[in-house]
Image (cartoon, rainbow, N blue to C red; front, side, top):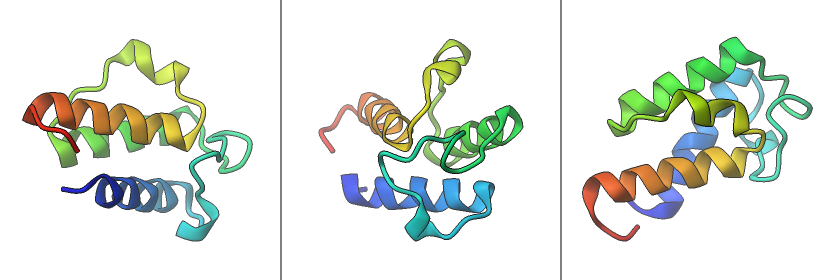
Length: 87
């Protein structure tokens, strides 16, 4: 899985949950202000990512995530750790 592939997949997941077009989801989009993601939708995104990539996102990390880029970076880091590879 390439870095770009993961990024595109995450943006697709976020756009599905937020019910917006994928081109509206940018790395610098604020999840709440720009995409209208509430805590329930945030949990839905986290659970989807955990299942898809077989990683575990710590509960205490979730409230710190406010931008799309943070989700992408966190997920990439966890996948990299899990696979022990550089992506």
